[in-house]
Length: 397
Image (tube, rainbow, N blue to C red):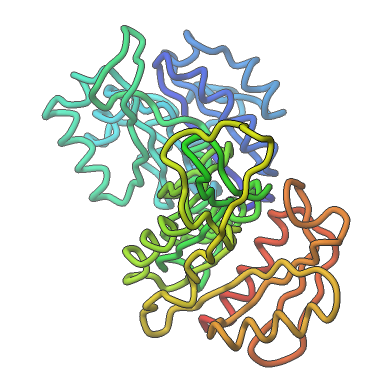
């Protein structure tokens, strides 16, 4: 995680969305960050300092006049790796845009020269007001980074216009991208496929496999945190979408093929972590098939060779996955690498305990175009994702 050992100042201004800031403070702290919370007087009316102190293990700051902290605004402005303002009310945005310094938080912001991430939150009409929009434009021009607001329920009821503060996970993802070290993936267009595909026997029955999508989702999240622009092409899963990642949902292998052909034109990297079905019914029924005599004979045909049929842009790094069982599986992975013109193949042994489908861990072997394969130990799928992306970065260089 990019938060380990980092110093984050969390500025909280006075809106009902303050309760989400508690979750954000906890997640940043769990990620290893040293979190200093700065509350405005209005924010303290919503959530008291003891709550944030319990979540971060550090004293909360709220006044310019605290004994012994006369220069706290200068110290925090200089030492913080990132300042996050969540929620940022219309009033806070106006004061910051005008350069006012009438409390600890705005004084800190006026002294700040490093990155600031701002999560606006307010009534939808207040957000749409020309004054607020002008203030936002001013702050962006000064280098502030904005996330949200989202459309959804506000304090006074549902809204179809922006105003709701982004969820803590989305803010956490944006913060992680700002803190991530310089990476060859930064700014690159990365496509990751994940999950199974389904091929219909009839409208209610399908041929599929037990892929959970965890490996692909971990890769998408890790690539986004390294600064890549990530599109996740996902088959049916129940996993939440990683923060900062764009989703493209598919069901069948043919849909996966069409989606990739449309998306691949701008891709710098394609990581094929999905587990598409290899066969589909040659003539799927249009109505549900009755049990009848108790048996059903299906004629199957091969699904499209997704990677083999893609028209890839020049220089696109392509990573394939191979799930093998029995015999010389490394040799078969090397053959797949050659046959499909891949840059890397990530080999899974289907018989390996704790690896493959529907588990949180994986043990893979990385097969390259040149050099010996690297067999990794049993790791979490997120750790495997990081190792795979290290290899992708090496290829990009």
